[in-house]
Length: 116
Image (tube, rainbow, N blue to C red; front, side, top):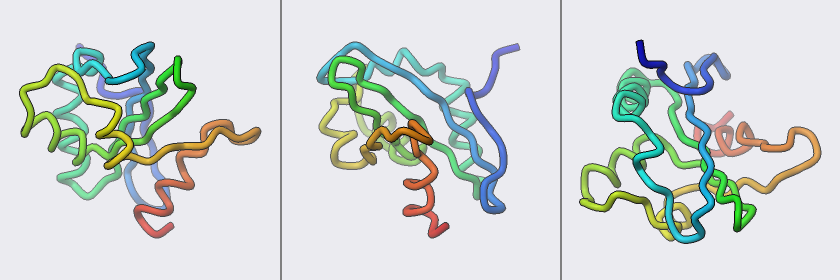
């Protein structure tokens, strides 16, 4: 049985689910890093009013982006590309500045998006 995503739980009364990935590429994130069933799962989370997203760490750039599931799915539906350009993450995603604790403060971004 294929797994769904890396992390799930509740946050401020919302079901939250996300996938964490990394890439050594500097200019794009290959879509074959995310399985089709994971994309369908994230679509379902959003459809049911939950919080779904991916975190992508561009290792050579030392940058982490949060991309909401609806933006991920929109890109996939509208493009024939096999990768998401870094420009798409810059325009539609959220750059997460690493801190000491927590290291990857994605909840700060979730609060901005959902008014936490």
